[in-house]
Length: 498
Image 1 (cartoon, rainbow, N blue to C red):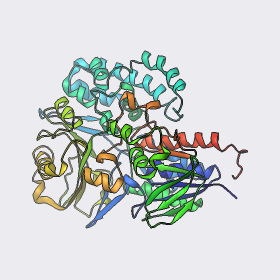
Image 2 (cartoon, rainbow, N blue to C red):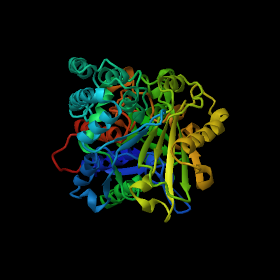
Image 3 (spheres, rainbow, N blue to C red):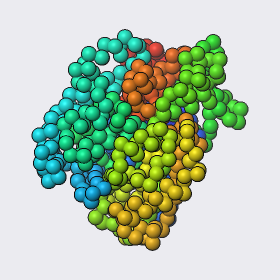
Image 4 (tube, rainbow, N blue to C red):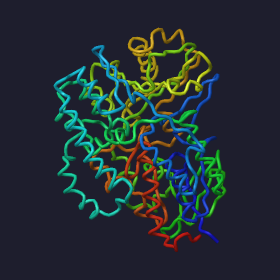
């Protein structure tokens, strides 16, 4: 008989871990508490509009391709990945704008138009980002950081790369124009970090985008979820939806299975959790079984910001709006300081606007557009979100009308939202944080939640809160780390079934 792996959660990390475990020969059962696969990558359909709930940027498509190649399949047979151009449009508060993406020459031309003095600095920034990428992503993103000595071995290389600097300090070192400094320091926000205190190892994201470009699946990110779901079905992974795990069963410090909210239990030789590790440990693992991750220690961690996401469709098309737009407010550091301190965000917000119909018009009815807009906001740890919710919603719409989408209110034909309270309730995210714990140095690599539990044998974790971190490449890479650990913990002849 093969050994049985239970995967809790069907985000990209959970599905990738399920496929990698299946390839190793495990019998795999994937359990999802929501009514559809995808976790934060689920979809909403309203009045002919298709909305991706969360991830909208694919920057390392090879990580998806690998999963299909494990089973001698090709991703294009399941989903079509489309290039996005430009990658982003930056709308600055002084009325200027910059289109970012394409070739290096395209980017240099845009920089020269805005700030000729920064052309050479950008080229040096790009070269430095590549050096960080070669180490941070190329060498370290797919390997376990479960031993302190391994972390210490990396310190000299990281020091030589200047990773003791923050992302803001890294960017400021090369660029003089305030607008460009903002544009090229937002990368940590994509994974839940503050550029002003996140280590510059996250500047590798800049070269990651340059290396493979920015992509979007035809049919939306949900089409990629559906493709992975089809692959899981084909290779014999058992998927259960609408089922909530209430407890991870443990005997003598070792996983024995999971128990559902209805009292039923499933035996397992190992459990892989795809969710917020803070909430997994607090809610699913009895206190007596976790000596390292106590409630007190978990609550002392620093968490990422919250997210307010407004989904809306319009009865017209805004054809001059690109697929991805970053709308900067007047303030930058001040706004982020307020948000990460748990203070009200105020009226001077910065926004990320997603218009997928710029790439795939079929995501809206003919003559219409589909959007979502995301505003970083405080999480629930020190902030009363409900008191600010309506003010944030109206301010977001005001900014969009003033800066990007004229007369938006009169053209909306569908509108709904998600806020930190729903991230808490729907996704089990501690404090409603958008990306689990913040990616500061003391919560990265060895200091982040380990992919193999330190206390409980045969319990593994994937997803944003684990090594290597948040973002689609990060969560997919966390599944590769768990695959590495499973090979260590369950050695077998090549190709043998367990």
